[in-house]
Length: 454
Image (cartoon, rainbow, N blue to C red):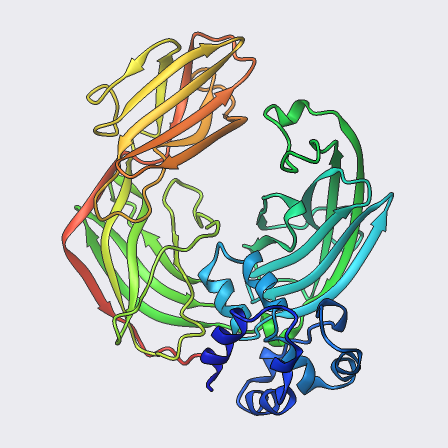
């Protein structure tokens, strides 16, 4: 049975099937002999429910047995925690994961950093959080310097979800340089009363008004192994692309375990800023690597977006790919703001820079509610919001951001929804994310240099 077949079979087995471990040490030795040292994953014995005590002892003492343990059902929890990302799922399946096991408890709240998925740009932290009193918990992470207080420079973070659901994930992306050798992670945990036992453990609407029971801060110092932080490859391209009368320069492509990134340079003579590039990578067998699910930094001080990502090809056995560009989203340089939008009005196509879009602003108490409706663009996999979440009370005033909102990509219509409380003004300026989409009748294709691989 090859590794893929073995993985599929194990995922359909009950969790209490120790006989599946027969021959596990030998299989692990065989896999390990074919695997780079950087891909070692030591799963803790305590997390392997249902195993006999003798095997627990073997896992503690034997690296091959620990490698074998990586394929038993604990892997289901890992895959569930990174279900939002094909790239991270492939990293887990390829044992590209660093065990941490650090945990702390304060006033009945326990935070445990279980695993790390790391490369030279990104750190994904897989953690659990529990309350002995059954309280609803929210965790807000901050990368800090060695003193444990001063915020680190040059990174963005993303996290969310219901922390009570088991193993969870947060992502830190380092923009100004490689990831640090040690990640100093401060986790501020807020505790709220949970709902009744019959209801889901989640906060009701108006979460910001829920009484705060207490806050605790947990500081972790997480060493990041060099064999992970040095991974990745950069492909040099050096080619101008002509798109809808605009020009952008495709400089390089970064291939990392967590994503594949196109690095672009703007032409200052363009009349519009590139906001999104619609593309995919395709290997010789026709397999496509498409939309990246995580946050992407802009890489520019202007609205031009220099970085564009798809899921990672790092773990693919194929080494030859072609880039296929099918379209792009643009912002006209004179349409960055919708100025003087009147509360109580609905604007329709022809009154807005975004074609076939309606925008309504209504008064809700002392605040406002905004809806934007637009048709889904055929063949455009990453339809996104027309507004940028930014607003001003008037031209030249301070830029602020909406307190809450959402984006719902329906089958035919895309809906944006924004809420703002305590806004007494009769007009508002709204930031624009993009003004128009270009669909290429003939896609642009570029054969990429061979990727060396892991």
